[in-house]
Length: 292
Image (tube, rainbow, N blue to C red; front, top):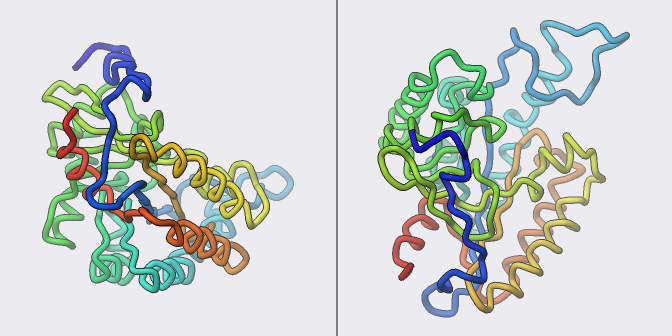
Protein backbone atom coordinates (compact mmCIF):
# COMPACT_ATOMS: atom_id res chain seq x y z
CA UNK A 1 0.00 0.00 0.00
CA UNK A 2 1.32 3.44 -0.91
CA UNK A 3 -0.35 5.40 1.88
CA UNK A 4 -3.97 6.31 2.35
CA UNK A 5 -3.99 9.49 0.29
CA UNK A 6 -4.79 9.14 -3.39
CA UNK A 7 -2.61 12.22 -3.89
CA UNK A 8 0.39 10.03 -3.08
CA UNK A 9 -0.55 7.87 -6.07
CA UNK A 10 -0.32 10.63 -8.68
CA UNK A 11 2.13 13.41 -7.83
CA UNK A 12 0.89 16.80 -9.02
CA UNK A 13 2.74 17.99 -12.13
CA UNK A 14 1.03 20.72 -14.21
CA UNK A 15 0.86 19.92 -17.91
CA UNK A 16 2.98 22.94 -18.90
CA UNK A 17 5.80 21.79 -16.58
CA UNK A 18 6.31 18.43 -18.32
CA UNK A 19 8.46 17.43 -21.23
CA UNK A 20 6.59 17.60 -24.52
CA UNK A 21 5.15 14.40 -25.94
CA UNK A 22 5.51 13.71 -29.66
CA UNK A 23 4.13 11.23 -32.19
CA UNK A 24 6.22 9.86 -35.04
CA UNK A 25 5.88 11.28 -38.54
CA UNK A 26 3.13 13.85 -38.94
CA UNK A 27 1.16 12.60 -35.94
CA UNK A 28 -0.37 15.32 -33.80
CA UNK A 29 -3.17 13.94 -31.63
CA UNK A 30 -4.33 10.49 -30.49
CA UNK A 31 -7.90 9.25 -30.94
CA UNK A 32 -8.95 6.58 -28.43
CA UNK A 33 -12.40 4.97 -28.66
CA UNK A 34 -13.60 2.81 -25.75
CA UNK A 35 -16.67 0.58 -26.04
CA UNK A 36 -18.12 -0.80 -22.80
CA UNK A 37 -19.89 -4.18 -22.60
CA UNK A 38 -21.56 -5.01 -19.30
CA UNK A 39 -23.55 -7.78 -17.65
CA UNK A 40 -26.59 -6.29 -15.91
CA UNK A 41 -27.99 -9.18 -13.86
CA UNK A 42 -31.80 -9.30 -14.10
CA UNK A 43 -32.14 -10.61 -10.54
CA UNK A 44 -30.38 -7.54 -9.09
CA UNK A 45 -31.23 -3.81 -9.04
CA UNK A 46 -30.14 -2.18 -12.28
CA UNK A 47 -26.93 -0.08 -12.36
CA UNK A 48 -28.89 2.74 -14.04
CA UNK A 49 -32.50 3.35 -14.98
CA UNK A 50 -34.28 5.12 -17.80
CA UNK A 51 -37.74 4.54 -16.31
CA UNK A 52 -38.37 5.29 -12.61
CA UNK A 53 -40.36 2.62 -10.74
CA UNK A 54 -44.11 3.08 -11.23
CA UNK A 55 -45.84 4.65 -8.21
CA UNK A 56 -42.43 4.77 -6.53
CA UNK A 57 -42.38 1.01 -5.99
CA UNK A 58 -39.02 -0.62 -6.91
CA UNK A 59 -39.33 -3.54 -9.32
CA UNK A 60 -37.45 -6.84 -9.18
CA UNK A 61 -36.98 -8.12 -11.75
CA UNK A 62 -36.76 -4.67 -13.32
CA UNK A 63 -37.70 -5.78 -16.82
CA UNK A 64 -37.94 -2.41 -18.63
CA UNK A 65 -34.59 -1.08 -17.39
CA UNK A 66 -32.83 -4.40 -17.90
CA UNK A 67 -34.26 -4.52 -21.43
CA UNK A 68 -33.06 -0.93 -22.03
CA UNK A 69 -29.51 -2.19 -21.58
CA UNK A 70 -30.11 -5.50 -23.36
CA UNK A 71 -31.12 -3.63 -26.53
CA UNK A 72 -27.57 -2.37 -26.76
CA UNK A 73 -26.17 -5.87 -26.96
CA UNK A 74 -28.80 -7.15 -29.39
CA UNK A 75 -28.71 -4.16 -31.75
CA UNK A 76 -26.61 -1.17 -30.68
CA UNK A 77 -23.29 -3.00 -30.44
CA UNK A 78 -23.54 -4.11 -34.04
CA UNK A 79 -24.01 -0.52 -35.16
CA UNK A 80 -20.74 0.31 -33.38
CA UNK A 81 -18.99 -2.57 -35.05
CA UNK A 82 -19.97 -1.35 -38.51
CA UNK A 83 -19.33 2.34 -37.75
CA UNK A 84 -15.79 1.62 -36.58
CA UNK A 85 -14.96 -1.02 -39.19
CA UNK A 86 -16.05 1.23 -42.05
CA UNK A 87 -13.64 3.90 -40.76
CA UNK A 88 -10.76 1.46 -40.18
CA UNK A 89 -10.91 2.12 -36.43
CA UNK A 90 -10.22 -0.39 -33.67
CA UNK A 91 -11.77 0.17 -30.26
CA UNK A 92 -10.69 -0.78 -26.79
CA UNK A 93 -13.39 -3.11 -25.45
CA UNK A 94 -13.89 -2.66 -21.71
CA UNK A 95 -15.95 -5.65 -20.68
CA UNK A 96 -17.24 -7.43 -17.63
CA UNK A 97 -15.51 -10.81 -17.52
CA UNK A 98 -18.85 -12.63 -17.37
CA UNK A 99 -19.90 -10.96 -20.64
CA UNK A 100 -17.60 -13.40 -22.45
CA UNK A 101 -20.18 -16.11 -21.69
CA UNK A 102 -23.33 -13.94 -21.72
CA UNK A 103 -22.60 -12.23 -25.06
CA UNK A 104 -20.16 -14.57 -26.85
CA UNK A 105 -21.09 -13.43 -30.38
CA UNK A 106 -20.38 -9.78 -29.61
CA UNK A 107 -17.11 -10.56 -27.84
CA UNK A 108 -15.95 -12.81 -30.66
CA UNK A 109 -16.88 -10.19 -33.26
CA UNK A 110 -14.84 -7.58 -31.39
CA UNK A 111 -11.91 -9.98 -31.18
CA UNK A 112 -12.17 -10.78 -34.88
CA UNK A 113 -12.17 -7.04 -35.62
CA UNK A 114 -8.85 -6.67 -33.79
CA UNK A 115 -10.19 -4.69 -30.83
CA UNK A 116 -8.21 -4.57 -27.61
CA UNK A 117 -9.86 -6.21 -24.57
CA UNK A 118 -9.50 -4.74 -21.06
CA UNK A 119 -11.06 -5.66 -17.73
CA UNK A 120 -14.22 -3.91 -16.51
CA UNK A 121 -15.03 -6.01 -13.45
CA UNK A 122 -16.68 -9.41 -13.60
CA UNK A 123 -20.27 -8.12 -13.44
CA UNK A 124 -21.45 -4.51 -13.42
CA UNK A 125 -20.91 -3.82 -9.72
CA UNK A 126 -18.79 -1.14 -7.98
CA UNK A 127 -15.46 -2.40 -6.65
CA UNK A 128 -16.32 -1.35 -3.10
CA UNK A 129 -19.39 -3.63 -3.20
CA UNK A 130 -17.73 -6.89 -4.28
CA UNK A 131 -16.87 -9.49 -1.65
CA UNK A 132 -13.31 -10.15 -2.82
CA UNK A 133 -11.57 -7.69 -5.16
CA UNK A 134 -8.62 -9.97 -5.88
CA UNK A 135 -10.96 -12.78 -6.93
CA UNK A 136 -12.97 -10.44 -9.18
CA UNK A 137 -9.82 -9.16 -10.87
CA UNK A 138 -8.45 -12.66 -11.40
CA UNK A 139 -11.76 -14.02 -12.74
CA UNK A 140 -12.02 -11.13 -15.18
CA UNK A 141 -8.46 -11.52 -16.44
CA UNK A 142 -8.93 -15.27 -16.84
CA UNK A 143 -12.20 -14.87 -18.75
CA UNK A 144 -10.59 -12.46 -21.20
CA UNK A 145 -7.51 -14.65 -21.59
CA UNK A 146 -9.68 -17.71 -22.28
CA UNK A 147 -11.52 -15.87 -25.08
CA UNK A 148 -8.67 -13.94 -26.67
CA UNK A 149 -5.61 -16.01 -25.76
CA UNK A 150 -4.06 -12.95 -24.16
CA UNK A 151 -4.22 -11.35 -20.72
CA UNK A 152 -5.58 -7.79 -20.70
CA UNK A 153 -3.09 -5.00 -20.02
CA UNK A 154 -5.70 -2.43 -19.04
CA UNK A 155 -8.55 -2.02 -16.59
CA UNK A 156 -11.58 0.21 -16.21
CA UNK A 157 -13.57 -0.42 -13.03
CA UNK A 158 -17.37 -0.43 -13.17
CA UNK A 159 -18.37 3.20 -12.62
CA UNK A 160 -14.61 3.99 -12.39
CA UNK A 161 -14.78 2.83 -8.76
CA UNK A 162 -11.80 1.90 -6.60
CA UNK A 163 -11.10 1.12 -2.97
CA UNK A 164 -7.78 2.07 -1.36
CA UNK A 165 -6.34 -1.28 -2.44
CA UNK A 166 -7.76 -1.70 -5.97
CA UNK A 167 -4.83 -0.14 -7.82
CA UNK A 168 -2.31 -2.26 -5.87
CA UNK A 169 -4.27 -5.44 -6.60
CA UNK A 170 -4.46 -4.57 -10.30
CA UNK A 171 -0.71 -4.00 -10.51
CA UNK A 172 -0.09 -7.23 -8.61
CA UNK A 173 -2.25 -9.07 -11.17
CA UNK A 174 -0.20 -7.71 -14.08
CA UNK A 175 -2.47 -4.85 -15.21
CA UNK A 176 -0.34 -2.05 -16.68
CA UNK A 177 -2.81 0.79 -17.21
CA UNK A 178 -6.08 2.03 -15.77
CA UNK A 179 -8.86 4.25 -17.07
CA UNK A 180 -10.26 5.21 -13.66
CA UNK A 181 -8.15 8.29 -12.99
CA UNK A 182 -9.88 10.91 -15.15
CA UNK A 183 -7.52 13.75 -14.26
CA UNK A 184 -5.46 14.61 -17.34
CA UNK A 185 -5.25 14.94 -21.13
CA UNK A 186 -2.05 12.87 -21.24
CA UNK A 187 -0.95 9.56 -19.70
CA UNK A 188 0.45 9.90 -16.17
CA UNK A 189 2.23 7.53 -13.82
CA UNK A 190 0.40 6.08 -10.81
CA UNK A 191 2.37 4.74 -7.85
CA UNK A 192 1.48 1.28 -6.58
CA UNK A 193 2.92 -1.11 -4.00
CA UNK A 194 4.60 -3.15 -6.76
CA UNK A 195 5.73 -0.31 -9.00
CA UNK A 196 4.26 2.19 -11.43
CA UNK A 197 0.94 1.99 -13.16
CA UNK A 198 -0.07 4.30 -16.02
CA UNK A 199 -3.38 6.18 -16.02
CA UNK A 200 -4.67 6.88 -19.52
CA UNK A 201 -6.93 9.90 -20.22
CA UNK A 202 -10.32 8.23 -20.06
CA UNK A 203 -13.21 10.67 -20.58
CA UNK A 204 -15.72 11.42 -17.87
CA UNK A 205 -17.63 13.99 -19.94
CA UNK A 206 -17.14 12.75 -23.53
CA UNK A 207 -18.92 9.69 -22.25
CA UNK A 208 -22.45 8.78 -23.24
CA UNK A 209 -23.34 7.59 -19.73
CA UNK A 210 -22.77 11.11 -18.42
CA UNK A 211 -24.34 12.86 -21.40
CA UNK A 212 -27.33 10.64 -22.06
CA UNK A 213 -28.06 8.67 -18.87
CA UNK A 214 -27.05 11.18 -16.17
CA UNK A 215 -27.40 14.64 -17.71
CA UNK A 216 -30.09 13.53 -20.22
CA UNK A 217 -28.82 15.82 -22.94
CA UNK A 218 -30.28 15.90 -26.48
CA UNK A 219 -29.38 13.12 -28.91
CA UNK A 220 -26.73 15.23 -30.68
CA UNK A 221 -24.80 16.12 -27.53
CA UNK A 222 -21.97 13.70 -28.33
CA UNK A 223 -21.45 15.55 -31.62
CA UNK A 224 -21.61 19.07 -30.18
CA UNK A 225 -19.56 18.42 -27.06
CA UNK A 226 -17.18 16.00 -28.77
CA UNK A 227 -16.41 18.47 -31.56
CA UNK A 228 -15.63 21.24 -29.07
CA UNK A 229 -13.47 18.90 -27.00
CA UNK A 230 -11.52 17.79 -30.04
CA UNK A 231 -11.01 21.31 -31.42
CA UNK A 232 -9.34 22.50 -28.23
CA UNK A 233 -7.21 19.38 -27.77
CA UNK A 234 -6.13 19.54 -31.41
CA UNK A 235 -5.04 23.15 -30.94
CA UNK A 236 -3.08 22.32 -27.79
CA UNK A 237 -1.48 19.24 -29.35
CA UNK A 238 0.67 21.55 -31.45
CA UNK A 239 2.99 21.85 -28.43
CA UNK A 240 2.55 18.42 -26.83
CA UNK A 241 0.36 15.46 -27.81
CA UNK A 242 -3.05 15.14 -26.19
CA UNK A 243 -5.45 12.19 -26.20
CA UNK A 244 -8.98 12.60 -27.54
CA UNK A 245 -10.92 9.77 -25.90
CA UNK A 246 -14.56 8.82 -26.42
CA UNK A 247 -16.39 6.38 -24.14
CA UNK A 248 -19.41 4.52 -25.54
CA UNK A 249 -22.11 2.15 -24.31
CA UNK A 250 -24.20 0.27 -26.90
CA UNK A 251 -27.54 0.91 -25.15
CA UNK A 252 -26.95 4.67 -25.31
CA UNK A 253 -25.12 5.92 -28.42
CA UNK A 254 -25.92 2.70 -30.26
CA UNK A 255 -29.61 3.59 -30.52
CA UNK A 256 -31.12 4.87 -33.80
CA UNK A 257 -31.55 8.50 -32.75
CA UNK A 258 -27.93 8.91 -31.55
CA UNK A 259 -25.70 6.71 -33.74
CA UNK A 260 -25.48 9.21 -36.61
CA UNK A 261 -24.06 11.84 -34.26
CA UNK A 262 -21.27 9.50 -33.21
CA UNK A 263 -20.53 8.77 -36.87
CA UNK A 264 -20.55 12.50 -37.57
CA UNK A 265 -18.07 13.11 -34.76
CA UNK A 266 -15.72 10.33 -35.91
CA UNK A 267 -15.77 11.66 -39.49
CA UNK A 268 -15.07 15.19 -38.26
CA UNK A 269 -12.07 14.05 -36.20
CA UNK A 270 -10.65 11.81 -38.92
CA UNK A 271 -10.88 14.63 -41.44
CA UNK A 272 -8.08 16.47 -39.58
CA UNK A 273 -4.42 15.94 -40.41
CA UNK A 274 -2.27 14.25 -37.82
CA UNK A 275 -5.00 12.23 -36.07
CA UNK A 276 -3.55 8.87 -34.97
CA UNK A 277 -6.15 6.28 -33.86
CA UNK A 278 -4.86 4.02 -31.09
CA UNK A 279 -6.09 1.44 -28.61
CA UNK A 280 -5.18 1.81 -24.95
CA UNK A 281 -2.38 -0.70 -25.41
CA UNK A 282 -1.03 1.33 -28.33
CA UNK A 283 -1.06 4.49 -26.21
CA UNK A 284 0.79 2.72 -23.42
CA UNK A 285 3.50 1.46 -25.78
CA UNK A 286 3.87 4.90 -27.38
CA UNK A 287 4.09 6.60 -23.99
CA UNK A 288 6.90 4.27 -22.96
CA UNK A 289 8.97 5.51 -25.90
CA UNK A 290 8.85 9.13 -24.72
CA UNK A 291 11.92 10.68 -23.10
CA UNK A 292 10.34 11.60 -19.75
